[in-house]
Length: 118
Image (cartoon, rainbow, N blue to C red; front, side):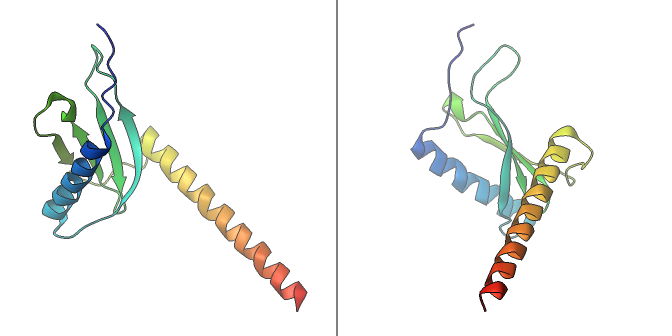
């Protein structure tokens, strides 16, 4: 089977983003920010179709597939919050914690420098 890249075009990306917002609003009654993309496959292989997976700010996951077939993309949002012990979510949470620690360290160093100048 020949591998084909089904990365969404800029126009399709805009359409997908609008569909994500509509699906999130329908599920929760208000818009919840997408925090990060945690999974993606753009090639169509014998083991699976292209997909994108996102984690929302409230720890639910959004999954999208079928945009490459010309019809309406299939978008689903998890019924429960993501399991923090799963590999992908554990990796995401560790990276988020490390970013927060680096940001706090930089802020502390900046405060120390500004107080030393006075």
